[in-house]
Length: 272
Image (cartoon, rainbow, N blue to C red):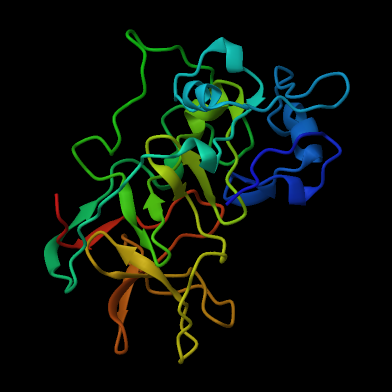
């Protein structure tokens, strides 16, 4: 796990993680942080001091406060990272069917893939309007509206494939919460979890050159990489990002690495 936030604007890519914007993956190195005002066309971005030291959250309290979607002004222009040492009691249990049961009607996840919300410019690099903290404050409940699960599935290494990261809330507070090179980061409620796949998680290569198996969705159906062994994207995908073949039956293919998304819904029954 990690790293996430570089310490200085002179640090190279090995000191930081990645950020997803406009369907692309960017290294969060020192140069990226230094260039934030230009990248988002907003001079408010200034995440480093006069000596080039980047403002990074350091304590568990900072992690909890800054990872709140309605973060306060005191964390404006901070790079937010929560460390593994902060997680001591988080335990997650998932019930996934051993034998998938396909349903006549698919279950679609709420909202557009990638976590874009109303008012966020689409893939043009612009920062969304700065929002106000709602009355009463506090983070929203886990899960999509309408009772849908926020978990999309489980990687073969046991890490959660989570719903799209709330990038609008993160950016509108003038914070950055990078993912590590594997596409994951930490919060104190979920522990370490993925928001995208970059080819670094555990995988099972397929003998026929098909995309590798990387996990299972909540309905027990296999989730495979976006591209096959030759680098070709899967074709003939339905609205869930699934299709069938004679070897694997019905299965899913994850979205591209920069999409902040895995799959768009569930074809099979899942435990509520």
